[in-house]
Picture (tube, rainbow, N blue to C red):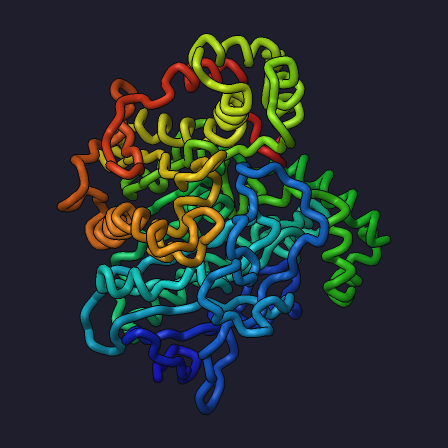
Length: 520
């Protein structure tokens, strides 16, 4: 049992950890569609919170290349991956506008232990996803480091990011960022309630993978979120820019036309079935994202520099070695390599031709196979540059540089064709290796081989949440990132520091201007 500001809740004990699932941090968003969220209405009696609840409406047709803030391929959206611990309630896959729920995992209640709090935002860009999955189970982190883990669901796609401010500024000034305001409301819930769960509201880490990491970067530039978190970790997810008002307004115009909505009947948006809105959102764009509206988000998150608002907040940034996977059947030849690269990253080539990229990479890595060259080049041109830019802009500020650290995930399963792909760091950070059998393996030997790195990475995470510095016993000394050495932690079977890993690739990719989907 626990008492929140809005009423009592009951959970259950699993492996000696108190687990509360589907805790309301906000009210049903249907009555405030496209408007800022409201706190939940107080309730009487005890609300049972012992199973996952609904998820936000999802895009029904999502075509998005892997490795650009894309949806996790394992455990996403409430689905249980093969071999995972089965604890997803049937309603966890049900979509609803009543989706502002969070999950709490804690070793103690009302014990005044002041534990660090780890708040996780899911991936899936700003389009899809959910934390209703065993992959994000926080019990092992709680037991490893005596911390409190909170995982958060919120509004997505058009429900969270349809910009109506140019049409009805009085009523919908914040509409382009209400999905982000949901996260602010969740962090306010943490500040107001987490002591009941044994947590310390003055030591809150926000972290997320893919789109979740991008949400962290966006919060760093949002005045409404300032002071609600005290450390940040972004895993394969960056937000260099937001959508401009012009781009967001054009997207809105397209979607409203599909709905038959004009300024004269704008009020009808409030009563349309949510399924109708979801269908129009899916047909309009796969690039819903925060809007630089000058109201909620006053500037681009990391352009032209790292946000001064959060310059004193510690930040860890990371990417995986092989973020961008190239779909290809059979053995790729050198003659086929340019076409494969163009198919994977056409809009990111900039001034380069595919042939020029392949030639440059063959010069850098003369022994590398065609498919490895294309994978490396696709990653360096599309998925990695955002992290490089964020790290460089943090390192350019003498106030943020001393507490900025960078990692690269190199670990991959010992199997033919296995790579360090997008999402592979999630099961290591959460210490939930058995929830990712496709990446880690299923045999006792495979799990045992990966466990030492999971011990190190999850240990780093809880120490970072506690202290604001990822360095801890058992980990090689991890220097802060700077523009001279570019020291980077390499997560592999033997974690170690490298200076400017893939430096030749980084310099080559810098010749192609970075283009973030949805911002051009």
